[in-house]
Length: 401
Image (cartoon, rainbow, N blue to C red; front, side, top):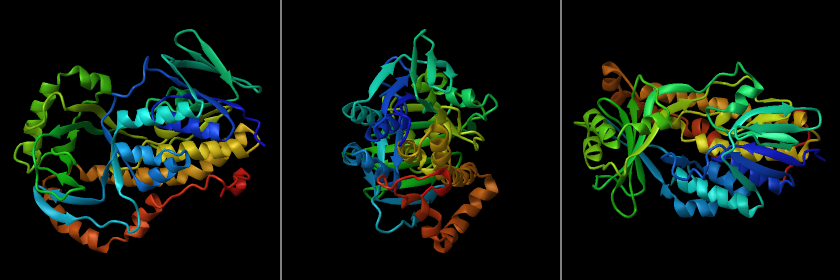
């Protein structure tokens, strides 16, 4: 039986509430400490949940609630400079991708955690810890503190917990692109439920029709300048729209999507990140989860799903193993290889989003051949068919199932 009875969860985004809910299911009392002064429901744009992410959410009984606020995407297509390459191959017998507003997902995860008995504390920015043999104490910028058996860092790509575990830990890498989202009051020629990945003349974008009319779209804008979410939002939306309209001018339908997006509907996301391999996932009574330790490129469509998986696997390990050291070692053994392989795939995709003139000419010739010859089950099946067995006992770090 585990000696862990209490946990401090730092971060109230996606991984934090899921971890806290799963810990409550495992008999461990968890409290979430969030740096923002209020719930961050309005932060971020849209994100995709893959079938494996929905399967993980089923464990905490919230998959149907998420589907209710999401748009299903059963098919994907690709265009290069306006030329259609057709519908992309898909895995059989899997539910569709679900696209959801990040703020809506935060709200649903928060409400599920509260229903499970999780407490949330806001305005709690972590500044230090005291890690002892008997427990761990977190110190916050407002002068307060909290103690528990373990501390879980779910505090995102700019994680404070990561640097407390290892002062030399790598930070998140910048992909060289800024993220934007918007809704355009326009119709485009695409099948309902189809998301199109479009390689424009100057930049990559994607779009999908909304069930009630209009088109949602996302832009990956190349930028040598790194801008955080806050820095990017300091620039007026109208200024960003001018840049987007110039960038996608001449693209079909990118140009019209940019032209028909208003400042009110534009979502400014800021820098898009990718996390390099993190050498140390845990130390003492501290451990990392979600984007704090593995943030793959948005190109994978797996960032949120992997964070949810890791949160639940961590709870399993803390439930079944006798002490934090054994639980953390088992958790890393379960997760490291999987998340790093997916991150490596995303890094390769990122390179294709900004092809040079030669690469742009070759893409319409090479991509159809790639689609015909790829082993989809081998490349994507291992990602999307992943299912956690919550009831299976994690017996030891050496015998992780």
